[in-house]
Length: 405
Picture 1 (cartoon, helix red, strand yellow):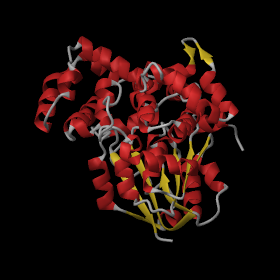
Picture 2: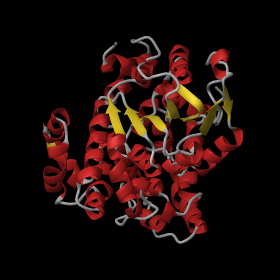
Picture 3: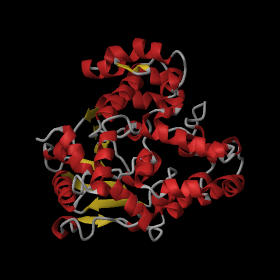
Picture 4: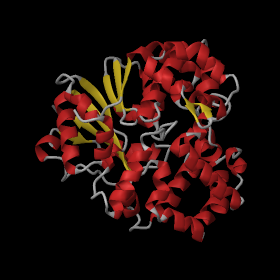
């Protein structure tokens, strides 16, 4: 089996190493050795609506920032296997799992993973979380960086860290120069007020030469976790004009859902969640789900491996739910077929697969072998509903397949 570094490079690198695209891909792959997402940017409410998770279901998912994996625990699945090629994401998932299992109450959980900026959080980590981590994970969070022990990000604003957190910091700097006041958005009482804010303060930014210059360079969107191949799929939705795509998806994020119910908009506009637990936080942080998430957390295993390799070691007909995020946008045809061969082999009757795409269209027809794909039914109406209701608004497509057997 290849090393995680080799698998990560294989997932991203599609072009010759010394070509322009190849150099960008290799630079992007290096970034994924560190923390990219402190919060995952796919809506778990949409996921659970599409998957119809049942108490006996075994779920396989890509881990990313871990919020969705934890939120799936509210549906009482039998097991969750969460995988990620980023070592930092695996360490973050293990920290979050230990936190929900061992903090004394919901208030402490929310202080650490909801607020993520309270001065006592490091001491809470040392007391309640660190003793329950494996040696490698504990050493990772205790390790010193240029800014002190890594665990201090729990007190310095967890969601301001990682590649995405820093990217949003740059976005806020640009917005500040453009005199954007996000407080107006966060205080809005209606969709009409949110739309008025967007039209007056955000839309004009997208017409500025500076923003157009930045947006039209592939490396500028690395902070969103968008590799070069996915950048092209995004731009294709507007005839190659990435600026138009970004403006429309920002409009959806800020205008199509009540701000009081959209924690993705809060992350974009305030670089954190609301300071109290409510619908504008992931489901696993809701007080009413605290007991279920804590009780079910031991059913999760987190692995620093590729999804295809993990599935290759699973029994036939053993999984009911698969969550692929947008990983397939990164894959070549050989990687796609290897993945779907293993999904199909391990799928139990009635299994469900969900994934997202940077562009609008389903990317599987014509690329995954017909003999494999013919065993699955594409759910057109549910897929359209998923992309319509996804509060993160970052993706062009949401796709649901059901296994026919």
